Amino acid sequence: MAYKQIVAAAILDSLSHPRKLLAARRTSPPALAGLWEFPGGKLESGESCEAGVARELVEELGVEVMLGTEVFGPEPEGWVLNEHAAMRVWFAEITDGTPDTLEDHDQLAWVELDAESLKALDWIPADLPIVHAVLADTLAGATR
Ligand SMILES: Nc1nc2c([nH]c(=O)n2[C@H]2C[C@H](O)[C@@H](COP(=O)(O)OP(=O)(O)OP(=O)(O)O)O2)c(=O)[nH]1
Image (cartoon, rainbow, N blue to C red):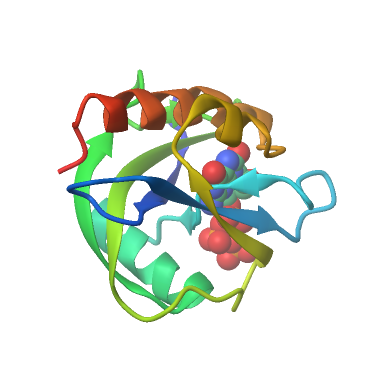
């Protein structure tokens, strides 16, 4: 089964000494509005995943990033979101710009990298295993 490829970033305040993760609250579609996610979007045809992540973050947040390691999911296409789509996620650190809600989001939050703080946000349900992996990888120092 071929999934539609989504790409996204787990943006950390620092790849080398991460303490916080940038979460973004969606504005659409209605079923996902108000839920928190990793900023990103659909890969465009002919685009590499890494280039797609960078493009989405410029469009949505107005920031340039340096990518760290991938937050590996169970499939080659990454984390399965639903029967149609899967998402690859990379750790990232902002190298230029201040994140803003330019497109697709109405709120951004720097969340402390601990289970309690992360759990306090109403994440898209499909993202919960990814949130766990982000926490595990940051605790293991596997971000860059
Ligand atoms: N970006 C992102 N999308 C997610 C996450 N979790 C999750 O289930 N999704 C779903 C929601 C959407 O159905 C799909 C991503 O599509 P999108 O609407 O963000 O893509 P896009 O920015 O390219 O949007 P568009 O131009 O097609 O409007 O993946 C997540 O953490 N981040």
